[in-house]
Length: 298
Image 1 (cartoon, rainbow, N blue to C red):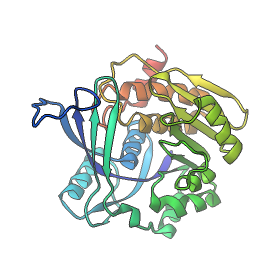
Image 2 (image 1 turned 45 degrees about the horizontal axis):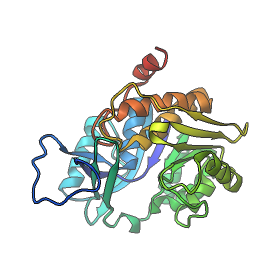
Image 3 (image 1 turned 45 degrees about the vertical axis):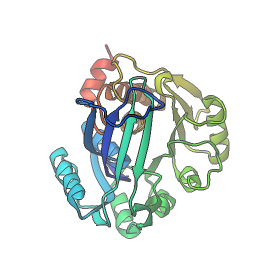
Image 4 (image 1 turned 120 degrees about the vertical axis):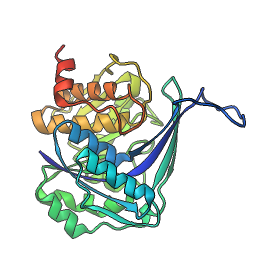
């Protein structure tokens, strides 16, 4: 299966901290507690789908700088085509993630000038024609594309991450036009089961999933109206939960396209995400399909 992924690619630095809130001290020797990787929602999803055996077309923007060259080298090593990566930014986006042993995290994201970029809609639409699905991350340059993608009969999927208002101005275009909608339970104003029903009543998405971390994920199947909770996979000790949502989203889409059963797809996706958080870094720890099936069927 071929999937178009359009979203952020950046350089991510993760820092293990003793806990939150962080007490002030001038220096801490954090041996093997600081790591740097190529990451970003678009890259994480592309790499996860690739690990599961999918064919990926990745669209994004980076800078013509050392960080940008590092990203291109990493993509080549990972077997991800860079032909649709534009080096037109003033500098490459970067992020810093502080995380503790309890799974709490605090993310600082510097997008540089990526929110000022415009995607070549005609080129992107041509790419859509050869894809079975499109992952269009909730970043500004995808706003026009998610409105037009449905015209090509392509399944569209997006993750709006943290949401507290179903009428959120920034995310409305993405929620209105996505067939598959993902988000986190962080900052929800009510229980996830109640919020997911409100979202479906408002936007009528085909599928909605809310990731709930250690509590698993809740799914609403728009066709049947069924709402179900899938418990988290706890067979691996968590190291860093950053990127867990990207992993859940990627694996769900992969399996849904393959088996067409949303509940069974989510059951496998929680295993994929549960194994992934045993590694540090949002773009590390992805399993193959064979590895997931071995765990799922054990």
